[in-house]
Length: 260
Ligand code: GLY
Image 1 (cartoon, helix red, strand yellow):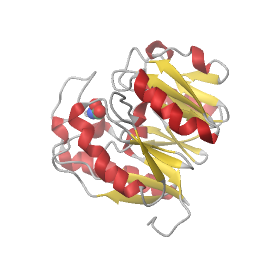
Image 2 (cartoon, rainbow, N blue to C red; image 1 turned 90 degrees about the vertical axis):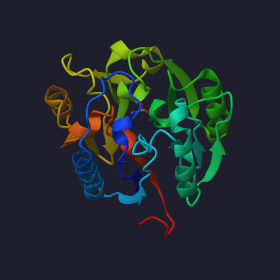
Image 3 (spheres, rainbow, N blue to C red; image 1 turned 135 degrees about the vertical axis):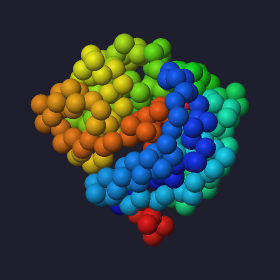
């Protein structure tokens, strides 16, 4: 069963980490409503949503993708590049331990799930402000034994690789190539975001559907022309905390009764 791990928006989200955007007031009730709508979309697309309790003292904790990477075989628990976010991993690890054996990135490594793009059995990991070479090396040590390959991808224009590049399925990626070195991905087909929508590459493939923010209509048309089934969701309030649709869930398959 497809399972989506999520976490309620923290009431302290307006104290979130920001790397590229100016700080703006965030309407918590609106952000929370948009997050619930996002969870409803995941349910509509067939996922069993496990929503973790909110963490009032962890402003960025709605971004559950960053503390872990889940494979069929194991879950890798991150050591987050942002010191202020390190405590987020504990409850995510507890939740994932019901489904997977855990492996943990250790000092001096840092790695955040937002930097990890998977294309079938190939992992491309952003070498970024949040993920360092030691973290990528440790990650490779955990996953290569299961037949996955791992390549580092220098990220220059955004926080995480997934802000610039996401896998759509069908050996095709959506990307803003101005923000990262696309050379390691050259064997795949790359669709470019519309030039006027540089933030549009962060999209979430759920089964055969592509979930994306409703604020990128030109890129949506590009995907629809290519035959992708696009579902647009309003995350405008969450975007003030630099949210993307990928970073608010961890998707993985489960077989056991723990998914709800
Ligand atoms: N606000 C998301 C992050 O900086 O990690």
